[in-house]
Amino acid sequence: MVDVDDEADHRARVASYLERFGRERNLSLPPLSEDGVGSIQRGSAVVTIHVLRDKEVLLVLSKVAVAPILDQERARRLLQASFVETGDAAFALHPQTGDLYLRILRGLPGLDYEEFEDLVHSIAQTADLWDDKLAAELA
Image (cartoon, rainbow, N blue to C red; front, side, top):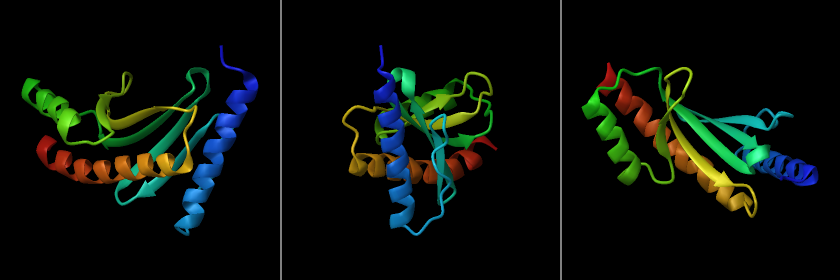
């Protein structure tokens, strides 16, 4: 079971990382919400950060396609890309909307600012590349 103080500490730590990320880039970012959600736009990618308190996990998401129709070959291509072309990120379909996301999961214990920054850069660069690529492929 997760200690309530640990939950607050994780939220506060990620909130400070988000604030620092914006400050270092002279970006005006909304603060992390009380429920642990924040966002950053980098290029065409909108990166959403979720502090999943009950699981002690940081979930970093970026939508790359709206409810794409995936035949077997396209699905195979995305799975292969997740294995070799997307770095820390992997493709995932949202269970309710069917939208296609890139996502990174990372445990909150031990997460430092440099790793947070690396995760945000990694998913933003990958999403910025793949949202355009998929728009052309899935059109």
